[in-house]
Length: 243
Length: 342
View 1: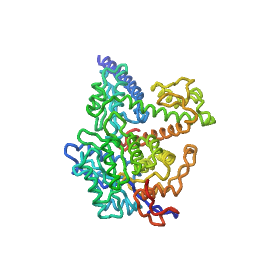
View 2: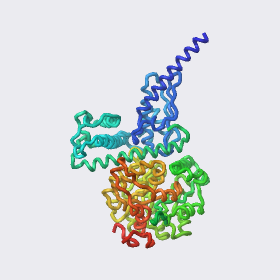
View 3: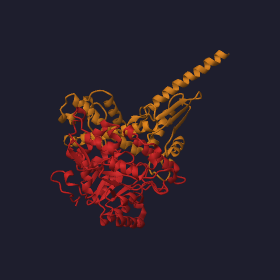
View 4: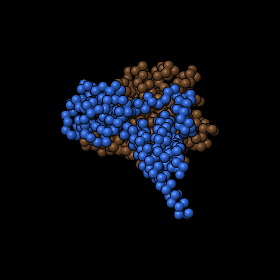
């Protein structure tokens, strides 16, 4: 009897551990929309756990008390959705901590009431357009990354406007770029242009290429520098924690 | 003045504060914000070299003696520009008000430039206050903090007709330098709070004013660069770029400086230490020693000359504020002060 109980408790805890691992993977699909990196990799998940009853408990944290509430809301809402969709999770308790708007965000996300309702009087629209703005920035930054690896293979810069996605070297940078273009509904098949205007999906013409690539580079520098500052701030705020 | 390898640098710290964020000054009912604000600033200090970190208690409120030593005696600064931040919503006497900064300006008139501020939501009363500040202290600049909370309002922007009235008043009063700080909590929250497009609008409509975007529009450097390249009267304030990146993230410091030099050029960049977040000493020394690495990763960016560093560390700001730079600290062939964006 004792053995059976122990075995059964063990089975439950194994199962909970599997679900917890799946929760972690699900959190790895949620990105900071501004930095375009996964929450798990940024160190924004301070705790994750699954109870024997299948309730996923997730705690999120950000680099500062005043991090922008709109991006914070998107991350908490996306994390809530991702975790809720994990098989074996019966309930999701996802909460942001140590943030000036934590209560409004946590309550709004748990009630699935949307951003406008969560910040009544302070916001007129949901955050879809904001998210799309930052996806377009991610496409620009990704274009810089991929074009650099193309040029590193000795391709003549003057030919860049003629290339398609199939001409770029395979790898995480290319996959990420295609993924973001797909998310925005931009052309992302092999035969589509490598360099497109993220607002329209049109191929960038040779005469506009120099300015476009300059903006792509600046966007990448900005995104990576911000990511660096955020990681530094998080480390300063939570010393000793794993980055 | 800073001297290295026989070169002399006139140093203007374009962004300094004399704040009081001690718990005695936290407004009842707003303590969590007052505390959150200064702790956030303190965390930024963590991006500087460890030997320059202060205790939180010291950081909340520092003495006049400490400031004068850190900035002028040890920090090589010739002239420092006060950029006030009121935050009266959270701090009973305000955080870093013009009145508080004026205590030091009146005591050390040659060391400080005192900027005032306005808030476009203040109507006629605010316009009178602006005029009174200029009468009293001869302010030539304002620092605008568009994200300041007030009741239900989380901020304002420079495109509004109310803001245009104030900018018109600045022109009339002889204020020509508009320093703008974008913040994270501007209303409405569903838009990107760091958006710099309202500055574009104001800079086009007020070509005789200079717009210095503090913290180079961080975290939207790309939008800022793209906007600034089209507006001859837009400058970049480097506070946070030097303090927050040069030590903690040197690779990105190289690249961000590279982008700023590429899009705006060396005549448009204004050094600021952002004291007391960071002390000027290590920033000035480090900036003068800094070189753009000569490797493939940075091949889009050119080398940075001694002349460029002299402009960035002080001569550009000296022009904006008509400062009299000692002859041996000027660039060859440069007059003491040039007219600004006439």
